[in-house]
Image (cartoon, rainbow, N blue to C red; front, side, top):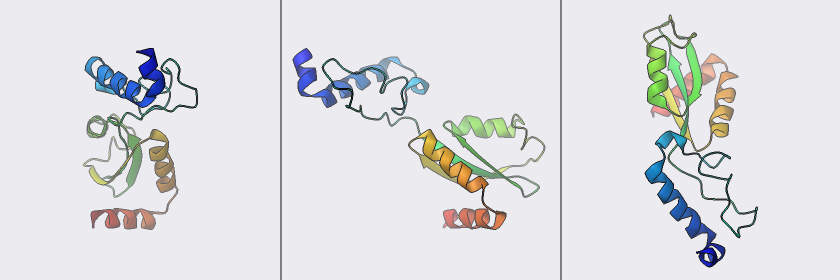
Length: 139
């Protein structure tokens, strides 16, 4: 097995990830950012420059919610269904007393960093630019 690992680290990681998918719950898999299945364990004989393939099960989302007072809430999440439920149940202070809420923009990203960068960018915009983004995403 060691010789197979040295000759083909990509195949080693593909088999390792397939095996982990059978044991780990979905939320424990990562996007190759240093925890879970990813960069913390290298196969024997692999140089530290080797980068394992990214796990593609978890996506991160930047979203905008329009509140009943016509204000916007911009956020990020990896579990959209759970996060929208938290908003609707009043567990998010900004949107707690501003129901009903409507999801008006959603964009997916491969990493949390990309989603957070987009969230920060959108939060810095004036209302008119956010309205244009929402309008353009509908077409």
